[in-house]
Each structure stands twice: as structure tokens, then as C-alpha cells.
Image (spheres, rainbow, N blue to C red):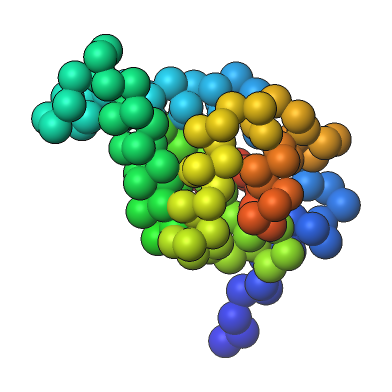
Length: 131
């Protein structure tokens, strides 16, 4: 019995097609609503604008670092993987990615593979998740 072939990392896959911006935005909306709900336990998200942003950074660090998906990414069937090898990016890089994403501007400047500055700096890419 032979093992299934290893998946091709996104950096080496000429057929790589990034998910649509709509799916990425949908994931962000789901995650943001969750962050507003969670931050409501320890701060007033309307008055303390830092609270949901802090929760978003921690959420990205935990979920992307350990599972390669946030809850919003799970719902929209996308995931965040390492660009070079297609594995998980780990908690430290996921925290940095979340911090950069919280700055907003890095996410708006994308290359042809829809990798924002935050993705390029941490060596990640958003891909479609298998069903």
C-alpha cells in the first residue's frame, strides 16, 4: 500500500488559485462579530475600540497558529498556510499576522496571488480549504 502524494506547497504550485475576496471578507466579518461578542465580556466595545481589535489579534494567533483557520475561515471554507511548505504558520507568526491585519493597510495592498503585505511578511497565504 502506498501513501498518498504530499500536497504541493502554494509557492511551488503553478495552478494555485487564491480564494475570492468575498470569501476572505466574509470570514473577516464573522470573526469581527465574534470579537465584538467576546470583548463585551471585559470591556465596552463601543467605548473601548481597542478591545475587539485585541481579541482579533489573539483569535488569529490561537486559531490560525494551531488550526490554520479562524471560525470565520471555517465557515467560508478557507485557511491560512505557510507559503513555502503549505504547513501551519505557528502561533508567533499568526500573532504577527493578526497584528499587521489589525493595521488594515497591509491587507489592502495585494499581489497577483492575493497575498497582502501581512501575508508576505509572515510567509503565509490564504487558500481554499478542502471539504
